[in-house]
Image 1: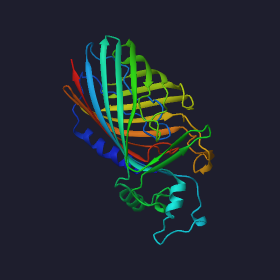
Image 2 (image 1 turned 180 degrees about the vertical axis):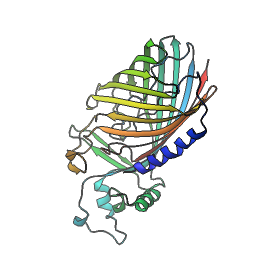
Image 3 (image 1 turned 45 degrees about the vertical axis):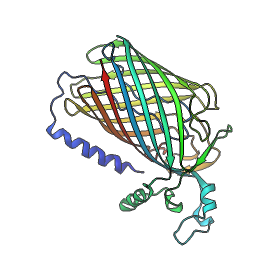
Image 4 (image 1 turned 135 degrees about the vertical axis):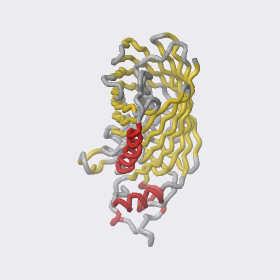
Length: 351
């Protein structure tokens, strides 16, 4: 519903191409990083996009990132069946009953990658979650009104609330509210770059999640997960790069379903140190909700059952050993992703 955000971002980023400097022989910057932060998927592992190309042996890359997201989703209801207040909003008790997700969140991430051998890279990452009422609701409702976009029911709920209540048919329950601080899980990763050429790189990746996160509120399943992935980098032209990560995630407990993940990305190298990227995250859902509803595109379906089809548009850069990236993310097709997400990341390379 907010594809206008991303389209505007793409136009702004693309304007830098007008005075772009040829990238020369510098290596491509690779796909956008960042994990799946959609609350119904959050307790389980998900892959972040990565490059199949190996780093120089002995390289250590330390990274940090900040996610800022606004989330809203309600259970199906007919406003005519409820007594609305003078401001057009639902009574407080009904707002609580009908809210699936309504909060803002800031997530801090730390990561470390080590190219231990010419073909083997090892990594780890961890996150700390903050949820709160926030301040973006009024801006988002104004933006929707300016362009005549649907508010998806936001207008019936008070602004700047923090509440989530996500239930699945297998007994899964993730609920909470107010200002919350919660640790996430620790992810361990290993990548084998088994094929390398000037234009094509292939790799395999394995992941193991250590459930250190807080179960209460839905920040961890409380069980390990295992993931396996195939990665492909293709650079047919100097300025263009194409990436594909496709994998499977197997929860070892917590009632989550096996998930497939498919991450295609396109990189345009605007200059030697800056790239513009468009990327998707298509991922199966680990849960099925309890209620049916009519989706405008897919018709009758069940809450949280559709796959995620997130779109990311961003820019990535590098200056010597310092790397940075920014992107905006939303799910414009199935709506099984954050309402709007901003990502800011930075890393420093030690060699």
